[in-house]
Length: 152
Image (cartoon, rainbow, N blue to C red; front, side, top):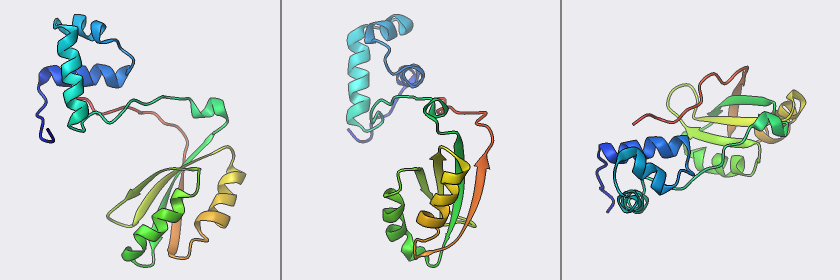
């Protein structure tokens, strides 16, 4: 079932679940004028095909004290060093995303910290000390103005 093709109903279901993953099947069924069983079957098919990979809890990082969000572009000495560097970055809890990229940087990471001092410590002691990292550029996020999923 890896090549399950979604239709308009599936797209509507996904859009609603991306807004609120806890919506009951019965409520979705009422919205789209189908049976709850139809909703259940559609969601199960999308799970089995890998379209739906799980549900996620959204939290406010700032309320937990994580006030500093930054992005770091990482230049590697050699592109072949990527797997080793990623393994080391995985061990740093503050790294919440890592992307293998084209262009100026080999890796682009997102970091969340509680303070600028913590970010400085991370850069000096943990990230820039990784042997295969040639250089880094840090961009501090001042505001997250758009935070959304794709619209189907």
